[in-house]
Length: 185
Image (cartoon, rainbow, N blue to C red; front, side, top):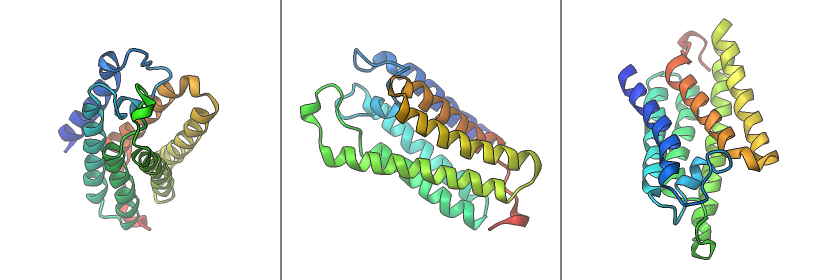
């Protein structure tokens, strides 16, 4: 399982840092998000969208294996929302007139649900554990919440902020989080 999680994490790192080279001309790692990589009309958008789906499926597997109802419920919301984020694509940034608006609206809904469910998941993990696991769970919930807020406040750097959030969140989920079945909610 550790090898599987390592491969999926490496995929996230590589796709989010290399795909921008092949995306549309004005794409910036600093200001454009991974959703923009998968947007309607973006070159090679399918690569980012498949990555979203693989991340969602991987999160489902990791959290379902915990056998903790709380993790299964919020893991389901998190994983399925992330999969649906890859299915429903962000608005077209290359040619806005070609945007299918309802797909962009669904993308926004599922991207938001992904973030909110992750905050509930990490905060719940904190409440079910002690010591380092508790501190890290609270830290991840706060980090995800604050970065989301900063992305709205500072759109010129939202791309790098989102990458920090994604990389830290999946690192925590795949390599640090240790569910405590004795204190399960």
